[in-house]
Image (cartoon, rainbow, N blue to C red; front, top):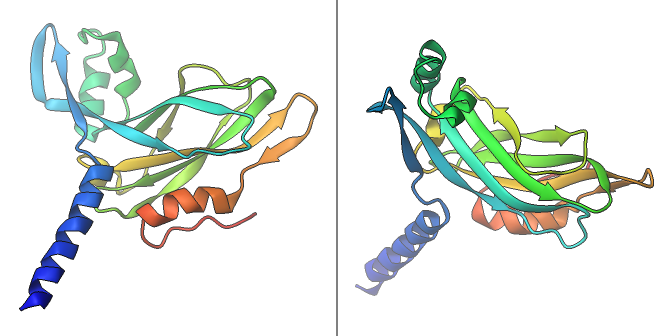
Length: 194
């Protein structure tokens, strides 16, 4: 009789851990000429910034916004009627990644971005490269054939992968440090050294 109780307790603790990590996305409804169209929305998700002890770059703000195909199509077709200028960023289906970062020594940076869907499955990742000093409002659009599975509870990890410093040296991330933070939260995920 104790076994089912233990199973239920373990099951609920695992479910609550996943829900606490991947909160539901905040929905924003498109407005055209002041009228709200709930069927055309974007979804704001949080991003987990991986803490790195030796990184020459600090990521201070990170956002992920899912843009469904239908919303992107409407924004493109009604570009003159959209009331909010920010909607111009949402013309294409995908996940818009926005980062604010700073550094005293970096002159170019590659950010590692890894995307997971609402089912805690790895959708893929990319190196978001900025060939200038880190700044506020850097943006990249991530696309994938299964991107729609990100909509409700998807999440993103971001970290500094490489940085070219003023003195010409290249700083590279420590895979063990990054894996130690991502790995426990996501099954079967491990970055390999280059």
